[in-house]
Length: 301
Image 1 (cartoon, rainbow, N blue to C red):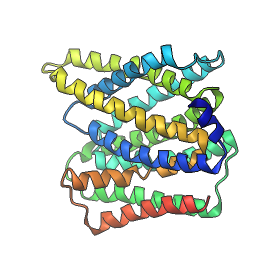
Image 2 (image 1 turned 30 degrees about the vertical axis):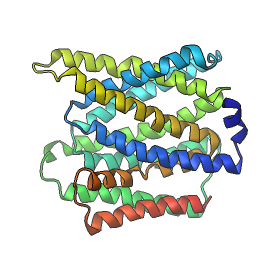
Image 3 (image 1 turned 90 degrees about the horizontal axis):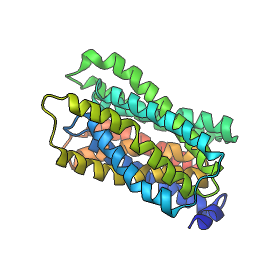
Protein backbone atom coordinates (compact mmCIF):
# COMPACT_ATOMS: atom_id res chain seq x y z
CA UNK A 1 0.00 0.00 0.00
CA UNK A 2 2.90 2.34 0.69
CA UNK A 3 4.14 1.94 -2.89
CA UNK A 4 0.65 2.77 -4.17
CA UNK A 5 0.47 5.95 -2.07
CA UNK A 6 3.94 7.03 -3.21
CA UNK A 7 2.97 6.43 -6.84
CA UNK A 8 0.04 8.84 -6.45
CA UNK A 9 2.19 11.82 -5.47
CA UNK A 10 1.87 14.66 -7.96
CA UNK A 11 -0.90 12.97 -9.95
CA UNK A 12 -4.49 14.04 -10.56
CA UNK A 13 -5.76 10.92 -8.79
CA UNK A 14 -3.55 11.70 -5.80
CA UNK A 15 -4.94 15.23 -5.68
CA UNK A 16 -8.53 13.96 -5.67
CA UNK A 17 -7.76 11.44 -2.91
CA UNK A 18 -6.08 14.19 -0.86
CA UNK A 19 -9.16 16.41 -1.18
CA UNK A 20 -11.36 13.52 -0.05
CA UNK A 21 -9.08 12.83 2.90
CA UNK A 22 -9.11 16.52 3.89
CA UNK A 23 -12.93 16.69 3.86
CA UNK A 24 -13.23 13.38 5.74
CA UNK A 25 -10.74 14.73 8.27
CA UNK A 26 -12.88 17.86 8.65
CA UNK A 27 -15.96 15.79 9.48
CA UNK A 28 -14.07 13.58 11.92
CA UNK A 29 -12.37 16.57 13.55
CA UNK A 30 -15.75 18.14 14.23
CA UNK A 31 -16.83 14.92 15.94
CA UNK A 32 -13.49 14.84 17.77
CA UNK A 33 -14.02 18.38 19.05
CA UNK A 34 -17.54 17.61 20.24
CA UNK A 35 -16.19 14.55 22.05
CA UNK A 36 -13.71 16.71 23.98
CA UNK A 37 -16.52 19.10 24.84
CA UNK A 38 -18.15 16.50 27.09
CA UNK A 39 -18.63 16.47 30.85
CA UNK A 40 -15.13 15.22 31.70
CA UNK A 41 -12.17 17.46 32.51
CA UNK A 42 -10.53 18.27 29.10
CA UNK A 43 -7.12 17.23 30.43
CA UNK A 44 -8.48 13.81 31.43
CA UNK A 45 -10.34 13.38 28.16
CA UNK A 46 -7.29 14.23 26.09
CA UNK A 47 -5.12 11.94 28.20
CA UNK A 48 -7.54 9.04 27.65
CA UNK A 49 -7.65 9.72 23.91
CA UNK A 50 -3.87 9.93 23.59
CA UNK A 51 -3.13 6.73 25.50
CA UNK A 52 -5.74 4.96 23.35
CA UNK A 53 -4.30 5.92 19.98
CA UNK A 54 -0.75 5.42 21.26
CA UNK A 55 -1.52 1.84 22.26
CA UNK A 56 -3.37 1.20 18.99
CA UNK A 57 -0.37 2.46 16.99
CA UNK A 58 2.25 0.58 19.02
CA UNK A 59 1.98 -2.90 17.43
CA UNK A 60 1.91 -1.36 13.94
CA UNK A 61 5.00 0.75 14.69
CA UNK A 62 6.97 -2.10 16.26
CA UNK A 63 5.94 -5.09 14.14
CA UNK A 64 4.18 -4.08 10.90
CA UNK A 65 5.73 -1.05 9.19
CA UNK A 66 9.44 -0.72 8.38
CA UNK A 67 11.52 0.91 11.11
CA UNK A 68 12.34 4.61 10.65
CA UNK A 69 15.55 5.65 8.93
CA UNK A 70 18.20 7.19 11.24
CA UNK A 71 17.49 10.76 10.12
CA UNK A 72 13.84 10.41 11.19
CA UNK A 73 14.54 10.31 14.93
CA UNK A 74 15.36 14.01 15.09
CA UNK A 75 12.23 14.76 13.06
CA UNK A 76 10.13 12.72 15.50
CA UNK A 77 11.67 14.67 18.40
CA UNK A 78 10.62 17.95 16.80
CA UNK A 79 7.11 16.64 16.09
CA UNK A 80 6.75 15.45 19.69
CA UNK A 81 7.68 18.89 21.04
CA UNK A 82 5.28 20.73 18.70
CA UNK A 83 2.38 18.37 19.42
CA UNK A 84 2.93 18.61 23.19
CA UNK A 85 2.88 22.42 23.02
CA UNK A 86 -0.27 22.33 20.86
CA UNK A 87 -2.18 20.03 23.19
CA UNK A 88 -1.15 22.00 26.28
CA UNK A 89 -2.33 25.29 24.75
CA UNK A 90 -5.52 23.66 23.49
CA UNK A 91 -6.43 22.44 26.96
CA UNK A 92 -5.62 25.89 28.40
CA UNK A 93 -7.91 27.42 25.78
CA UNK A 94 -10.85 25.10 26.43
CA UNK A 95 -10.65 25.62 30.21
CA UNK A 96 -10.88 29.41 29.81
CA UNK A 97 -13.30 30.05 26.97
CA UNK A 98 -16.59 28.79 25.60
CA UNK A 99 -16.01 26.11 22.96
CA UNK A 100 -18.15 27.81 20.28
CA UNK A 101 -16.16 31.05 20.69
CA UNK A 102 -12.57 29.79 20.87
CA UNK A 103 -12.86 26.89 18.39
CA UNK A 104 -13.35 29.18 15.34
CA UNK A 105 -10.38 31.31 16.42
CA UNK A 106 -8.14 28.24 16.65
CA UNK A 107 -9.32 26.84 13.33
CA UNK A 108 -9.19 30.22 11.55
CA UNK A 109 -5.65 31.02 12.62
CA UNK A 110 -4.27 27.59 11.69
CA UNK A 111 -4.73 27.47 7.89
CA UNK A 112 -3.58 31.05 7.31
CA UNK A 113 -0.17 30.40 8.83
CA UNK A 114 -0.04 26.89 7.34
CA UNK A 115 -0.21 28.50 3.89
CA UNK A 116 2.61 30.87 4.82
CA UNK A 117 4.66 28.02 6.29
CA UNK A 118 4.12 25.86 3.19
CA UNK A 119 5.37 28.74 1.03
CA UNK A 120 8.67 28.97 2.90
CA UNK A 121 9.13 25.23 3.50
CA UNK A 122 7.87 23.71 0.23
CA UNK A 123 7.73 26.68 -2.15
CA UNK A 124 3.95 26.32 -2.56
CA UNK A 125 2.11 29.34 -3.96
CA UNK A 126 -1.57 30.21 -3.90
CA UNK A 127 -3.21 31.90 -6.88
CA UNK A 128 -5.15 35.14 -6.51
CA UNK A 129 -8.43 33.22 -6.69
CA UNK A 130 -7.28 30.85 -3.97
CA UNK A 131 -6.33 33.77 -1.70
CA UNK A 132 -9.81 35.17 -2.29
CA UNK A 133 -11.22 31.82 -1.17
CA UNK A 134 -9.03 31.90 1.94
CA UNK A 135 -10.31 35.39 2.84
CA UNK A 136 -13.92 34.30 2.34
CA UNK A 137 -13.40 31.18 4.46
CA UNK A 138 -11.62 33.08 7.24
CA UNK A 139 -14.29 35.78 7.29
CA UNK A 140 -16.87 33.07 7.88
CA UNK A 141 -14.84 31.34 10.60
CA UNK A 142 -13.95 34.49 12.52
CA UNK A 143 -17.44 35.87 11.98
CA UNK A 144 -18.87 32.74 13.53
CA UNK A 145 -16.60 33.18 16.54
CA UNK A 146 -17.61 36.85 16.96
CA UNK A 147 -21.29 35.98 16.61
CA UNK A 148 -21.00 33.31 19.28
CA UNK A 149 -19.14 35.83 21.44
CA UNK A 150 -22.00 38.33 21.18
CA UNK A 151 -24.51 35.75 22.36
CA UNK A 152 -22.30 34.46 25.19
CA UNK A 153 -23.80 34.99 28.65
CA UNK A 154 -21.33 33.17 30.94
CA UNK A 155 -17.54 32.89 31.24
CA UNK A 156 -16.70 36.39 29.98
CA UNK A 157 -14.25 37.03 32.82
CA UNK A 158 -11.66 34.66 31.32
CA UNK A 159 -12.22 35.51 27.65
CA UNK A 160 -9.16 37.72 27.16
CA UNK A 161 -6.76 34.94 28.11
CA UNK A 162 -8.90 32.46 26.19
CA UNK A 163 -8.39 34.54 23.04
CA UNK A 164 -4.63 34.66 23.63
CA UNK A 165 -4.42 30.90 24.12
CA UNK A 166 -6.73 30.26 21.15
CA UNK A 167 -4.52 32.34 18.84
CA UNK A 168 -1.37 30.59 20.07
CA UNK A 169 -3.08 27.22 19.61
CA UNK A 170 -3.93 28.19 16.03
CA UNK A 171 -0.28 29.00 15.41
CA UNK A 172 0.67 25.57 16.72
CA UNK A 173 -1.95 23.98 14.44
CA UNK A 174 -0.18 25.54 11.46
CA UNK A 175 3.19 24.48 12.90
CA UNK A 176 2.29 20.81 13.26
CA UNK A 177 0.50 20.77 9.90
CA UNK A 178 3.55 21.99 7.98
CA UNK A 179 6.08 20.12 10.12
CA UNK A 180 4.21 16.82 9.88
CA UNK A 181 3.95 17.34 6.13
CA UNK A 182 7.73 17.73 6.08
CA UNK A 183 8.11 14.61 8.24
CA UNK A 184 5.91 12.34 6.14
CA UNK A 185 7.69 13.48 3.00
CA UNK A 186 11.08 12.82 4.60
CA UNK A 187 10.11 9.23 5.44
CA UNK A 188 10.54 6.61 2.75
CA UNK A 189 7.41 4.81 3.95
CA UNK A 190 4.53 7.19 4.84
CA UNK A 191 2.90 4.65 7.15
CA UNK A 192 6.12 4.32 9.15
CA UNK A 193 5.89 8.03 9.93
CA UNK A 194 2.20 7.80 10.86
CA UNK A 195 2.55 4.75 13.11
CA UNK A 196 5.59 6.06 14.99
CA UNK A 197 4.18 9.58 15.30
CA UNK A 198 0.96 8.30 16.87
CA UNK A 199 2.84 5.99 19.24
CA UNK A 200 5.38 8.60 20.39
CA UNK A 201 2.81 11.39 20.57
CA UNK A 202 0.18 9.33 22.37
CA UNK A 203 1.97 7.43 25.10
CA UNK A 204 3.92 10.00 27.06
CA UNK A 205 2.82 13.62 27.48
CA UNK A 206 -0.93 14.01 28.02
CA UNK A 207 -1.45 10.64 29.78
CA UNK A 208 1.13 11.71 32.39
CA UNK A 209 -0.63 15.03 33.01
CA UNK A 210 -4.03 13.32 33.11
CA UNK A 211 -2.79 10.78 35.67
CA UNK A 212 -1.44 13.54 37.94
CA UNK A 213 -4.72 15.47 37.72
CA UNK A 214 -6.79 12.33 38.29
CA UNK A 215 -4.87 11.42 41.44
CA UNK A 216 -5.26 14.95 42.78
CA UNK A 217 -9.04 15.06 42.39
CA UNK A 218 -11.21 14.78 45.48
CA UNK A 219 -13.99 13.20 43.43
CA UNK A 220 -12.44 11.65 40.31
CA UNK A 221 -14.71 10.39 37.52
CA UNK A 222 -15.39 6.71 36.95
CA UNK A 223 -12.68 5.27 34.74
CA UNK A 224 -14.94 3.10 32.56
CA UNK A 225 -16.87 5.88 30.76
CA UNK A 226 -13.75 8.04 30.56
CA UNK A 227 -11.68 5.32 28.90
CA UNK A 228 -14.54 4.42 26.54
CA UNK A 229 -14.65 8.06 25.45
CA UNK A 230 -10.88 7.89 25.07
CA UNK A 231 -11.04 4.76 22.91
CA UNK A 232 -13.65 6.26 20.59
CA UNK A 233 -11.67 9.49 20.40
CA UNK A 234 -8.45 7.57 19.74
CA UNK A 235 -9.92 5.78 16.72
CA UNK A 236 -11.34 9.06 15.40
CA UNK A 237 -8.01 10.82 15.97
CA UNK A 238 -6.10 8.23 13.96
CA UNK A 239 -8.53 8.54 11.05
CA UNK A 240 -8.74 12.34 11.23
CA UNK A 241 -5.14 13.36 11.92
CA UNK A 242 -3.69 10.44 9.99
CA UNK A 243 -5.86 11.30 7.00
CA UNK A 244 -4.83 14.95 6.88
CA UNK A 245 -1.12 14.14 7.28
CA UNK A 246 -1.35 11.57 4.47
CA UNK A 247 -3.15 14.16 2.34
CA UNK A 248 -0.24 16.58 2.75
CA UNK A 249 2.05 14.03 1.10
CA UNK A 250 -0.28 13.72 -1.88
CA UNK A 251 -1.20 17.36 -2.50
CA UNK A 252 -0.61 21.03 -1.69
CA UNK A 253 -0.20 21.46 2.09
CA UNK A 254 -1.90 24.85 2.26
CA UNK A 255 -4.85 23.68 0.20
CA UNK A 256 -5.66 20.62 2.29
CA UNK A 257 -5.14 22.69 5.47
CA UNK A 258 -7.78 25.16 4.28
CA UNK A 259 -10.25 22.45 3.26
CA UNK A 260 -9.90 20.79 6.63
CA UNK A 261 -11.19 23.94 8.33
CA UNK A 262 -14.64 23.25 6.94
CA UNK A 263 -14.76 21.26 10.20
CA UNK A 264 -16.25 24.46 11.66
CA UNK A 265 -19.29 23.96 9.43
CA UNK A 266 -19.59 20.29 10.32
CA UNK A 267 -19.25 21.16 14.04
CA UNK A 268 -22.17 23.57 13.73
CA UNK A 269 -24.22 20.96 11.86
CA UNK A 270 -23.50 18.38 14.57
CA UNK A 271 -24.62 20.89 17.19
CA UNK A 272 -27.79 21.56 15.23
CA UNK A 273 -28.73 17.95 14.44
CA UNK A 274 -27.50 16.07 17.52
CA UNK A 275 -27.43 18.69 20.28
CA UNK A 276 -30.52 20.68 19.21
CA UNK A 277 -28.50 23.91 19.06
CA UNK A 278 -30.21 26.71 17.15
CA UNK A 279 -28.48 27.74 13.91
CA UNK A 280 -30.45 30.80 12.77
CA UNK A 281 -29.99 32.84 9.55
CA UNK A 282 -26.81 34.66 10.66
CA UNK A 283 -24.94 31.50 11.62
CA UNK A 284 -26.21 29.76 8.49
CA UNK A 285 -24.84 32.63 6.34
CA UNK A 286 -21.45 32.49 8.07
CA UNK A 287 -21.32 28.72 7.63
CA UNK A 288 -22.13 29.20 3.94
CA UNK A 289 -19.19 31.62 3.65
CA UNK A 290 -16.85 28.97 5.06
CA UNK A 291 -18.08 26.37 2.58
CA UNK A 292 -17.94 28.90 -0.29
CA UNK A 293 -14.36 29.82 0.59
CA UNK A 294 -13.33 26.16 0.50
CA UNK A 295 -14.96 25.75 -2.92
CA UNK A 296 -13.17 28.84 -4.26
CA UNK A 297 -9.81 27.54 -2.99
CA UNK A 298 -10.40 24.25 -4.81
CA UNK A 299 -11.54 25.98 -8.01
CA UNK A 300 -8.46 28.20 -7.89
CA UNK A 301 -6.24 25.14 -8.02
